[in-house]
Image (tube, rainbow, N blue to C red; front, side):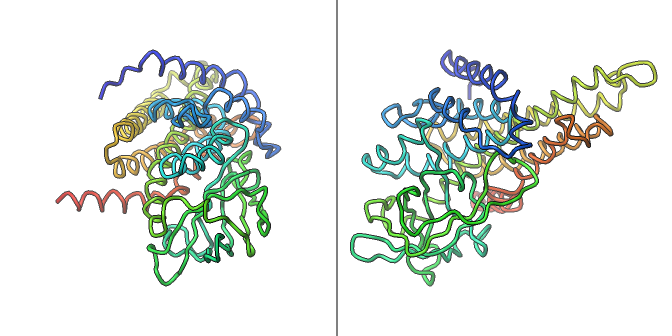
Length: 382
């Protein structure tokens, strides 16, 4: 693997970093405080192709690669973690299954608006009784004529309160287990029987809405089925593999923000007549944070490179997501510690980084599940 970026990759990375620093970072605290969806930012990122980095230009995206996506996600999440997860879901959990398994007509109708930044997408997987056990779905899709009749409730759906479109995981028959899972693309704004349920009050990523999706005899055309019946669970797993690269990159960005803020504060904060950055106790914290975050970024780039080269990346994406989120959480904790009492106050961003980092260890597969995935792949190799 060559770690040197191409001229095009470097140009996009620089463009997104500049945009994030100039337009996203200055409003991050306000977005966190008001819980406001950053619609204007999403529209601008869409115009830049960042809502569909790997989506072909034909379908509204930038037509680039996953390595570029990682760099974009880190830069955006470093500025605002909430904006980062919105971008991640549009690219990965929503965009990946459509881009990979959708027909030309489905991509034109449902992928292009989201990849082009005109609307948000979401992925309806989690249910109250089906989180880590993704095959235990109760949301039912019964085929009647040329329509699926959908009944059920999805929980903890990122972008759920603002999304126009959804890739919905449902079961045609719960007794079939994972073999009964299908994925349907749902036009949420034009589907009778659909409504947004409870919007969650969360610890962090507060500008990213998380809600229930409620389906009551909702009619979804058969033409909206991704692939064929019986393929849904496999599609789900590959989409989650891709999504973990996005969430790992989000975590890495949060960790880098915590490091940068702690580094700047340590240079300015004077105790015992000199900046606290001169004390070895603080230097060791900063050194560990920097080393671990660099290692996380390298794991993410390896997983992205494997995906771009059409190689198996399940284990590597799980490793990258698990490690990046763990070290981001540790960096955020150390950041608060370096800020001291001020780190516990909302006047400074350290406490926001700590609240934002925690979810990265939980969603798109808890880090316990990541370890299960890694161990399973290791044992397959023996």
